[in-house]
Length: 418
Ligand code: EPZ
Image 1 (cartoon, protein in one colour):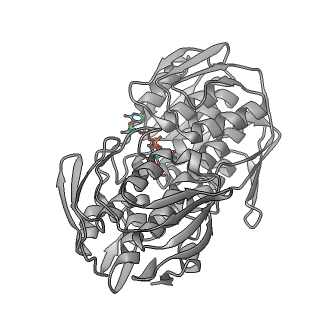
Image 2 (image 1 turned 90 degrees about the horizontal axis):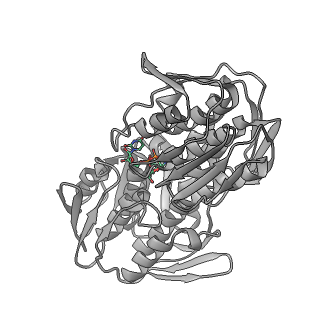
């Protein structure tokens, strides 16, 4: 298994480009199943999760090819499909659940492995299933699989008890080919939902309100393939901004990300980080960092996917900060590893209290989930000495060549195979 060796203390300087958004690419790739013919997605990041989705699409009868240096991913669907998303693939990527809606809408049946829990929480899919049942699908659970079928989904009014990003995306996709109108209330407002809707509309779907908490979809008879360029990854951008801040650097993060990261940029400015908008992105100048409290919440609030990275920064801030995680019940797996580097963090239920200005020291640490691994890399950049981050396959799921990007900014970081 690969690991990263990072020697801290380097000040990051220069330009870095943001890749396409993982959390937009995954539902968009699932959406290609809805369209007759070929759909090409541009700006698709080269990630493990993308390759997992490619293998799932292949198993579902959709031929695809990915030209990684052009970031171009084309999918050719077929009139029929085995409609089986196997456990062996689904267990490695819980976002596979977003195949359920498109399969039911296009082919009238689906057998999708239940994703199972994951490190950060139980992450049930009950809201996905209850919404599809309300649209007329017959849903059974057997042998760890979701068995779903329907003649044609019927439009319905759906209220999500909890804001769910992939739940909103799954049902929005299912509704594009349903009979009649579907209204999603308390829908997720994440930019990735809007990106998905924009592509579906290009395919011929009739959707209004994506990006707000109420989305209306008028079902149509069929969707056609299209070519669509994916939005930049706001979480990768936020991670790179924190890398500049935690090393006291001066970095130009290039990509149209400022409008997508309001809550993060405002919070980091409040912490003393200088962030200026430029025509190509944002320029980040790390000054003395001040401790500031934060609470995660659905968009447009502070994203849970930036919580671990923010915590690494707070370890270096002057003062004491409280970080409250309200979305997932177990998203503090990085705390134990940060403590091994000398961080002073106390967990009080959903809250982590960080005593800042700790002199972090390099140590062997272990990645446990995608954003936790990013947090450890950030802490290592500011730590004294060398840190060895193990199990970085977690990192490879969601960051495209992070070590290459950081090394180009002056970080002393290398990937070694062990
Ligand atoms: C998406 O996951 C993202 N993944 C996650 O990013 C992100 O952390 C999360 O949204 C929250 O923003 C993708 O978009 C591929 P949810 P998702 O459904 O859709 C509960 C990353 O690091 N819930 O919005 O699975 C759930 O348990 C990943 O890139 C139910 O109870 O998250 C959680 O507490 C990690 N029942 C809350 O809702 C359901 O049926 C929000 O989850 C669905 C969700």
